[in-house]
Length: 131
Image 1 (cartoon, rainbow, N blue to C red):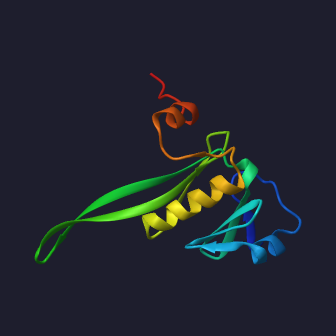
Image 2 (image 1 turned 120 degrees about the vertical axis):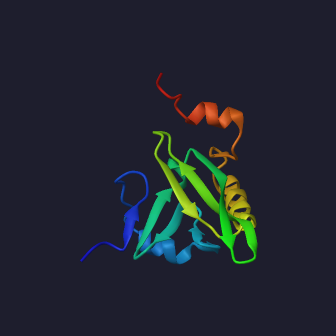
C-alpha cells in the first residue's frame, strides 16, 4: 500500500504529518498549517515544511481557443513553489485571488519565503541558461 502523504521537495518525512494536515486551514485547492504546506495530487497529499520553501509566486498561462462563434483566450493560474536547490512545483489553482490569499498566508507564517515574481527574485533563484 502506498503512503498517502509524500514529501514535496525532499525525502524529509514528518512524523505527525496526518495530524498537521487535519489541523491545517483550507486555502482553495491547498491546505496551509502553521509550519507545513499541503497540496493534493491525485490520490496523494504532497507536503513541504514552510522552511523548505524559498520562493512562491503566481504564474499565468494563456491558451488560445477557437470555438464555434469565435476565438478566445483561456487563462490558467498556478502557484509556483521553489526550494533553495532550484526544485520547482507548479500547482494549478482555479482563481488568481485564491493564489494571492495563499501567498499572503505564506508570507505571514514564514517571512523568509520570497513572495512574488520580481526581477530580483528571478535573478536570485533561477540559474542562467548555459551558453
